[in-house]
Amino acid sequence: MNVEQGRFAPATVAAIAAARQQGITLHLEVLPASAWTALEASPAIPVGRATGQPAKVYVIFDANCPYCADLYRWLQGDAFRGISMRWAPVAFMKQDSAAIADVILAANDPSKALDDYFRTNDLKSDKGYELPSFVMQAKHAQDYTGLMHHLREWGGYAPMIIIRTPAGEVLQVHHDKGEALRLALGLAAAQ
Image (cartoon, rainbow, N blue to C red; front, side, top):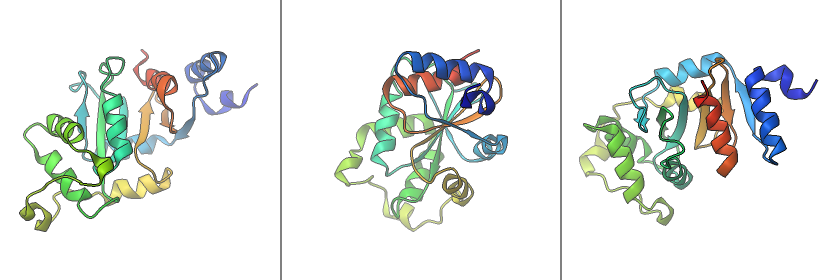
């Protein structure tokens, strides 16, 4: 018996083995079912073509995180558009992270606002996002402390990708890129 068979559902074990045969290592960690409950209770922005369906993937992000922006752009590819995703903001990178998240969440179309934000702002240049001064002075509309607590509990980094498989497993995908990430997200999309 391999190590995965004791930790993962049979379909996940099979996917890990199939990826390994292709020379790809999937870096997955099992989270408790309560993790998914915490994500569902957090403010989040639907992304992708399947926005009206229950989420199968959550991405925890900070609006000022250039890696989050890169991941967002990468996940806009056709291979991922059919997966129902929610992007849940946290605020820890900069003083205006919560204000930016509040503006995006309060937009008439939060999905479009998130898309516009990540497509038009060069976060690597450290210029940040232009916000009206009254937004910076306003009390934040959302409380991000609950999700921040869980983020620290689950590893403390962003972007953090969490998926739920059809078997009900809640899995954290650790820094996979390219084909490994596509295969990991495929676990959530499998029927």
